[in-house]
Image 1: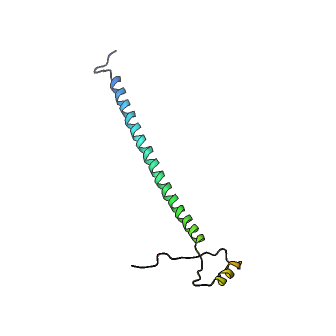
Image 2 (image 1 turned 180 degrees about the horizontal axis):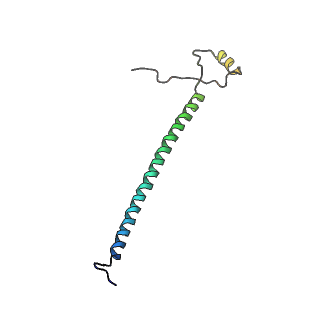
Image 3 (image 1 turned 30 degrees about the horizontal axis):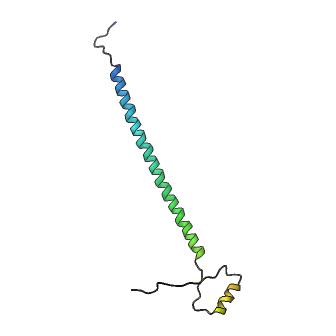
Length: 99
């Protein structure tokens, strides 16, 4: 039995479905790319924050907590002998001139 205005639309339906799949594939690629870039950005921000904290801790460990200026050699040796002092270093200000 033939219906009025019955046409073979299988070719058109197949073409439309292929285009829809192609468009969805491109959209999915952009979505995955966007998610990857966003996660990379967030990881970089978090790692930067942890790096700044670690750098501050390292700088504090390497920085003297107290400074003595113009001490003699004997006074320096006495400082080396004290148990309360973890380390003793020398400080030299190479660029102290102001223009």
